[in-house]
Image 1 (spheres, chains in turn blue, orange):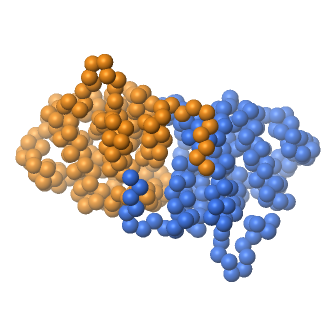
Image 2 (cartoon, chains in turn brown, green):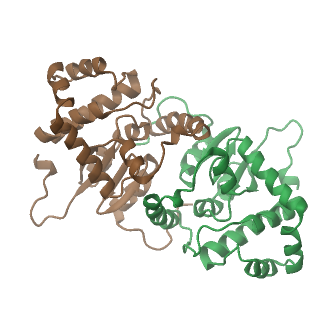
Image 3 (cartoon, chains in turn orange, yellow):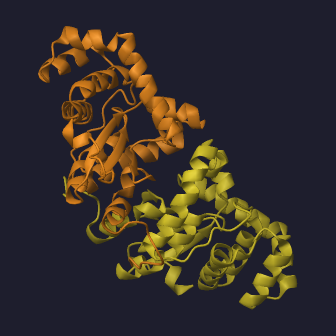
Length: 217
Length: 217
């Protein structure tokens, strides 16, 4: 856990990254956030959350629940993935409930945050490149086995009230921090929402708060 | 009107740009869209619309009608303007109804689209840099006078059923094209939503439809 701990007297050098296993923009961002952080001597603290919980808290609905916006979003998911150089095949069904994958995340996180990060990549890539349905318990047990977990352990985790509570608390913590969508990033208290804020985040990491007009044209 | 007409046998070389006079992201985009188009030998066809009409058609609400999202949006408007090098001072009140400014747009557009474009810049800059309330009829008459219009003519235009109908038709045309927010762009039938899609639009204009992974990391 050393990489995640704040050293005494050393300013916080983290990027907090909130994602949902069912969010295509979160998946795309998950493929660049570590490299962006590393270029600026930061570490990433990953937070698996449920978008449904944040939408409910903010009285929002998923963009794909609106027919007109869904059509555009489906196009934009694939175009944005191509633009970022990330392989993506939109899965069916979509979206899916992801609480079980997220509970495994928090269980792993309590032991070793880097292993939880590896599980995040494993789950996101399985859903968004191979169409593995993370809401299907048999498929999720198989995925856990691929990752080196005993399927029975995985199943025990997602049925365990302790990990249900931990995920609920993670959602509440996210909402308390102002998270209302995913991917959502916090850098030095500054919120950034969306895969499309990467360029602004890079600038922020390099130069700090934006001041005065900076022509990009 | 020559710049807006399609020449026989020449492919359509336009960018359709849908905006609302009350939309900060539309204002930011209005400051770069002409330069982007010019670099790719395109012209811009401007469409003043009412976001309220597109939200209603798509069963959406304005992001700033959600308290949690409003707080983030207010921050993101200013940060995005700084990032793009566009001066912005968020006005009060915000948002505002903009049908009268839009009706003047369409009246000018029928005479000379470039004059309508100039009016768009005039109105957007007045609201977003000087806080001129475009929904206040006296302020709007004063703004029309600055632009070289007779205030009485401006007032007659926005009260005229013909220009009310024209704006209604423009909203309906936008909705029929899949527009559900602003700024919204159509390039060769491809929809792009948001000030933050500029980089993708530039790539599209340069190389056409995205194919295969293109690493940007």
